[in-house]
Length: 299
Image (cartoon, rainbow, N blue to C red):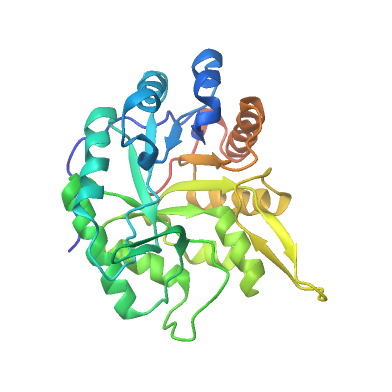
């Protein structure tokens, strides 16, 4: 069922400051004191379910910046339905903080009573597509809002695949009315790991479906006694040159849409992450000068 989102949504970032950063515990005080020149902030809602001091900081930060909620626990790809309790916890935050975007991942992390501390890959089959669309539809109906779903970083592929990932993501958005959160680093990582062309991947994504972009760092690990390497999506380093090049290509196709710098491990000073956000914003302005900035075809 295609979700029809007629509700007036909270304001997102201004098109002149379309790049945000992840708001992490290490920078709770620094962000409020320094008030950096960024477009918006993103948090994982699961970190704020319990209220208390973390939610107090989020309240103060929300007074300064537009907010996006990026969930890591809905397990949209699970064969079981999305947890009503988890949905209710996020809905409470939605009602309080009025995020302009709500997102999760095209993956699974829960089965029965087992909850994994990772985002597990999916086989790209019609059966999987039907399952994830069912859970997206339930989530959107529960929230009364359109959600975004992020493409994963993967390290294995399935012989059962009936379609490639970009076709899977396009069809998912077409069937449910959700948007795609296009993670540029994830595309770069899996292109290396699976020997795919990341530029063809982005070119195949329907621009009308993309609502947000992510940028992050990764690490390269060499196999023992081999020249082969694997890239691991750590969110723990600077965005590499190859990902910056891919980002420039993506915005040339998609326009100026909200973009995020993710940095979740080995977290540096706030100024380092803000500088990465400014680098992304400079790339947008380079392609689309302020006087005539191109709006995304997804808006």
